[in-house]
Image 1 (spheres, rainbow, N blue to C red):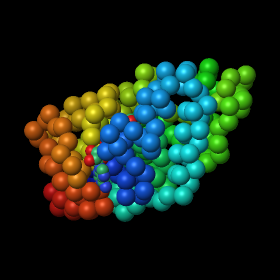
Image 2 (cartoon, protein in one colour; image 1 turned 90 degrees about the vertical axis):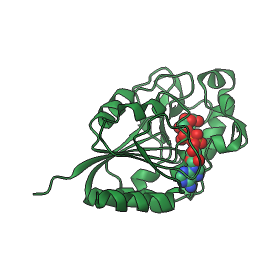
Image 3 (cartoon, rainbow, N blue to C red; image 1 turned 120 degrees about the vertical axis):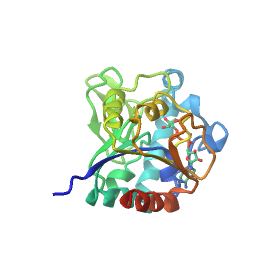
Image 4 (cartoon, protein in one colour; image 1 turned 135 degrees about the vertical axis):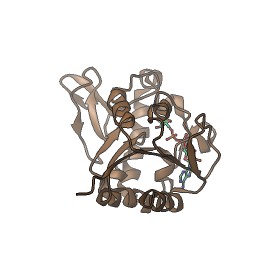
Length: 229
Ligand code: APR
């Protein structure tokens, strides 16, 4: 029996760009015309929760209208040849909709909500809006999103996955936001590391193969390379 290798993939906004979801840092600090810190930080939520709810309601409505692209689909298909673990910074569900079985969301999920005072009570809301005044257990519902200024509860699990990678790939992330960016440091020495991104990104490890392409071109290239490695 052939043992399948563990392929761990860290994805960011860039993998969903070709599905029509805009990335963050390409926008000069604006995210879909909003100031990121106003809509994606715990301080923003405290200052103007209605604005934050509306922002994520828009993102959720948009998500319903977009589709996984070839890069999401190829990573799902790669499960035929590898044990694939996706660690994503994205809050969309495009990896799951493409068919990936193991997806860890570091920064939360748009289709989930939780009461503001009760972090462990996560509920599925699909593509429905969250409105001001919607409560659970007496607390206002908020998006199940990790905002700037908040802990990243799934980090330890993600570190463990990366530490056990036999191949590690980084796709469509500027590696600007910590602690997610620090996952690159946990890929074991000697484990082949691939980076797919059409732009120059800040890389501090030298043992990296850079494929300077957008995901739809770079992901098939990378998969060909690792299949024949
Ligand atoms: N294919 C692959 N990569 C692409 C594509 C594409 N078609 N288009 C753009 N990119 C790249 C950009 O060059 C950039 O390096 O995707 C990366 C997107 O980087 P960011 O916008 O910084 O997104 P990301 O790294 O996912 O952000 C991390 O920041 O705002 C927070 O919590 C939010 O999860 C997010 C985190």
